[in-house]
Image (cartoon, rainbow, N blue to C red; front, side, top):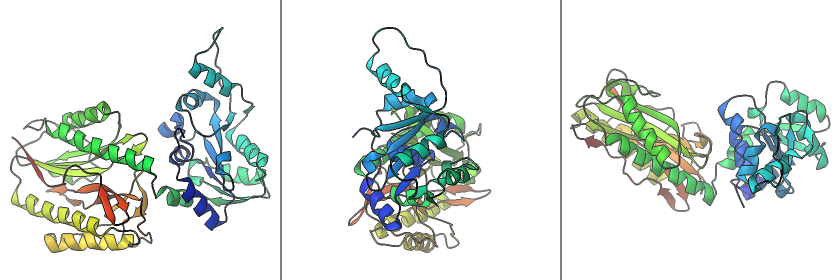
Length: 399
């Protein structure tokens, strides 16, 4: 069905285990995940409200609460949710005569009854489904201050519980549609890195290389999101933003980058040098690369995320960076750049089949440089399937 991203069996299983009668998405990632609806204003600024109500007993009876000002997007995106409740005033005039198909869909949405605000529309949808006294999980992340209290006051007999944790658990295991988009996003990023390195020469700036990177991303129907590209000692800045710094022979070039394809994120890291790599760069990068490879070999369903952390860090230390230390060695990825699981030493997450992971071993040394290997993989029954078409090995580009 059009624009359906949600892993519905997993949603129902988790809601059943938690004793939840309905779940409400409010944050941009969860609204898009639950309904397929990309609400522009939610994604570009804080505050605008859009909700998706999914009853546990009958998920097909979902309801989308949408702003009247965004009904054009709703008509254009062909969202699978059939029950739409709109709110707020927005003026649209209509031409005389027959409308084209898209305009007709939008007109039908504009003819729906209108509520004053999003909470009123949500309460009406809950009441219409007999859920006014139910146990309702509400995604707290997208609500404005005071909205939780207002919702509870309007539903005095309902038990409201936070849903952000539940949505993260649901989103952790991807569907085939999600996996395909994530694979495409990762491989577009690889080609964007190649396009950027193709212009590497003494004197080229970080900004010029970033422009080449993002141009390739857009050319492949993805959208720029993450573009940390740093040369030389600036490569040690974890969140480096491209500057007018010029590339010199022997410099490290660090990419930690990725766009968004069909709403799904990419996040990979690659290292190159202009000309032959200095010996220390070679040795350290090799250790980091082996750390990622060892972690990938250890990933299987049922393995603790903390075990993956230990394998990666211990490998890097053994292979050449004895002082290596990290807070994490990766994370899940999806509509959000950081989905579950968290590959940390204290994580309680277990690896599950269908999770998509970014596994990374960054190293940052101020005054010297930064190195990083990061691959994206999907967990299968017997291990991982990599999305990468490149090995993550150190690249030396011509002077």
